[in-house]
Length: 445
Image (cartoon, helix red, strand yellow):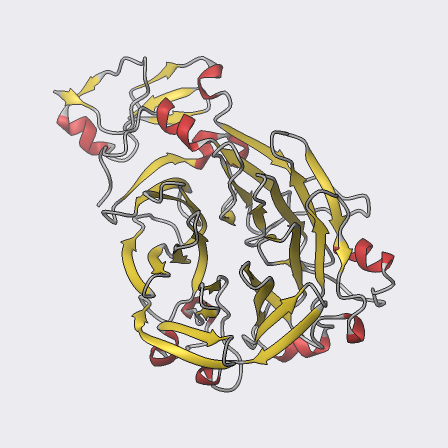
């Protein structure tokens, strides 16, 4: 006889099971359920509801005054230096909106929606839509910025749509503005939408990449000018999957990736299985062929450490990398062990020792911890056991979204996206304390 494996909660007496029983239930020996802790199907130990109080909370994204009902979110969750959380809602058909949780508040505020902001600026054409804010809401010098993506397929259909709009709001205010209203033609580009956005705080500019042709663009908020640097020559003509995360080194180089076999483009690995860059100082594209990816699959998400000396990144299956500004250098840290189809949630701890991931499309989606030093990982909990509202939601997105109290956020929705959009907050320190998990506990290899 031996104790069952798995996370242990403080103050709970656990039964002892035989080796045969433990072998039958290796992964769910001790786990949260809405009514307590399930012990390998043997029993449920009643735990007071207050045990998980303050650990996990959810919000349903509300309908906007203009009637938008949000049912999905794609990488559009971010935070400000003050600890505000900014989250987008969209329907992938007509319109997109922004909401905010101010630091220290649990009230979800409506900031604005794309159509209403553009109509207020007389910059919305008949039949125009704003299917998505696909960019992470990005803070720069006191303002938060997003951009629209109105056509997602990788084909010529984008030429039938108006180009993307920049939107923004002052972080001490609550009114979304169409920043492209005064630009030529009322858009940042004639055609194309933005799939990713990165700030260069040293130079006060924003960088983005378009769908479907992966053009690199720079936006300078000071003069409201968008500069199009075109498609990287190494990518060749045509279209390709645009990496959803780009990053800017301290020397002004903009790093990016492309390709994804799940989209059917069959991008050649000799071109897309490594990191590319644009040197903003001399205006030239280049490649780092020695900075390898696992395959021709672009970086999907990432987060800088606090002093922007290291950036941690991952693709949409959970392969983890680190960019070191000193050098610069590139390191493959390992792969997340999980049973899902995708990984679109990534949150780096302040001490850089852990990255918290949520997978999507698994038999049961879960919250995972990846150790950046050993490359090992473990599942902390199934999502549906953390909060009943998460049951049945199979798509989860969001990276680099922490508030001032050390809690991270992500969004969830079912697929097909036919109901509503959920924002979830996890107090990871309280969760691990409740589960009596230590950093050096058992991990999945």
